[in-house]
Length: 130
Image 1 (cartoon, rainbow, N blue to C red):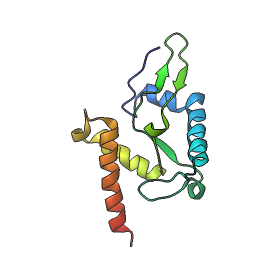
Image 2: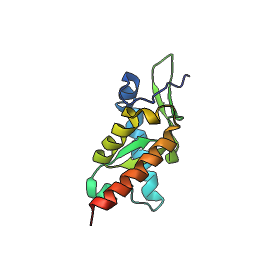
Image 3: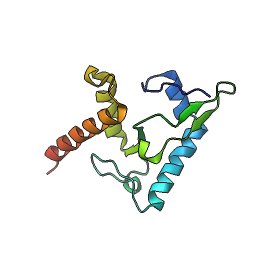
Image 4: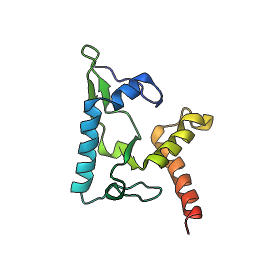
């Protein structure tokens, strides 16, 4: 089994993974587990909840649980719960605009870069909202 580098969201492999049934099941399990633990998933920037939005994206802080069987091509979605962060679509796209396009984040640990960007987004969001 080989672990592919899925660090760039525009990669063909990454898009294929996000369309896989394995990712679909993993997403459902993440939201189910969060709610079972007494947490209503919400975007950390705007606090829009899963109940309010109907759906939230899950942002990868790490890809360590994502694997593809080299002989069958089947994906394995075994990300740890703490390696995924719920986000509304608008803020997830904004995060990627910073993460994927700004050179200062290249080579950074993905979790560290994400946390820094999200903190900045929260500060901006609070300034805009009365």
